[in-house]
Length: 244
Image 1: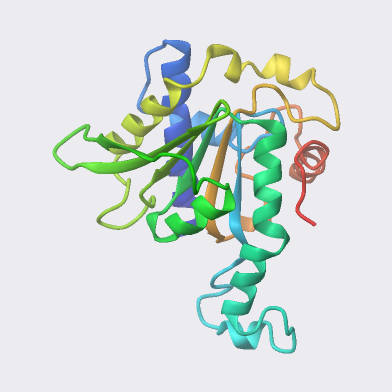
Image 2: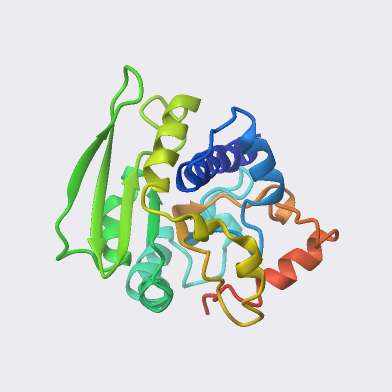
């Protein structure tokens, strides 16, 4: 349930962002349709990846050293983390942003704030703090801007200090939507981009710290023109650059 819940909260954020960008009223159940039909869809407005692609806990029981026993690049775990930081993973993320120039990159979780800054090469970029307070509780956002892209470091989508309430998630989505345009959610134009390209409307990149996997190994969204979820995953790989 935890894996599903995290993606549902992302869907609520993106539904609020879309409503803000389109200038329409946000219904409390809009996130459900977004989750079902839009989230991580091949022609959608966003996609998600992680700083460290391997799951931190595969099953919650088996220790890392046992799961990757005999793989010298992965054990101990610190060696794997350093490999991502100083090897190809962080370099891939910087190249991805430089090439596709997303409008907004959302970095989820303060615990890896230094890694987010390093991964996207933001060490020399000024940081602006913004307070998000849709109700009584305040959440602090760290914002970086460079070359037309805005990076927003936000709290985790879990825990007592995270973005968890519907009010907080909607408010954060509205903040994102203020940086987007109606055309960023124009899926007809996105579908016309063809294979081998990211659609123009794919302008929100959501970056997590470590992979928790997707429930059932697939994407939440199942588009109407992809009745077979396996086909949707295959089509998505046509235009989402993959780490080597």
